[in-house]
Amino acid sequence: MSVVTVRLYAAAAEAAGTHQLNLRLAESPVPLQQLIDQLNHTVLASAPDPDRSSAPSLERVCAQSSFLVNGTRAPLSRGQVAVGDVVDVLPPFAGG
Image 1 (cartoon, rainbow, N blue to C red):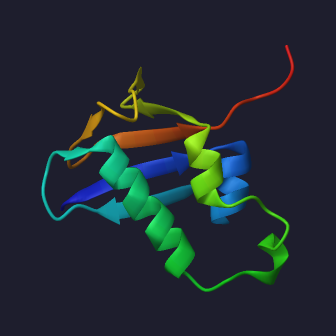
Image 2 (image 1 turned 180 degrees about the vertical axis):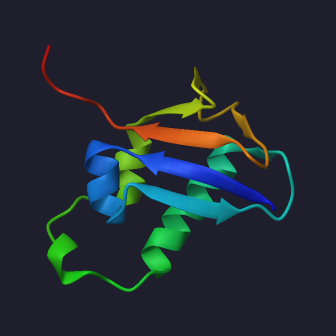
Image 3 (image 1 turned 90 degrees about the horizontal axis):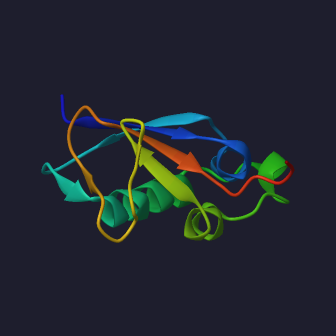
């Protein structure tokens, strides 16, 4: 199956309305940026949830986030994602 698992944390989960999504890839591997664009499009195309009206947009959250691919930090501009990978979207965390 040509699926990538995307796990969302904190503000990313709030913006998406879920903690995990499975995205299908038309080809593999793809640039991480392409997967994140697909993620944003998928969330935007889903039915709007009135409870999330005050949540930040996922696109905005992703622009400030760090990404892990299979547990290893991946730069958005150079990262690659393949079928079966797990991508974690980690927004900035406050505190110490």
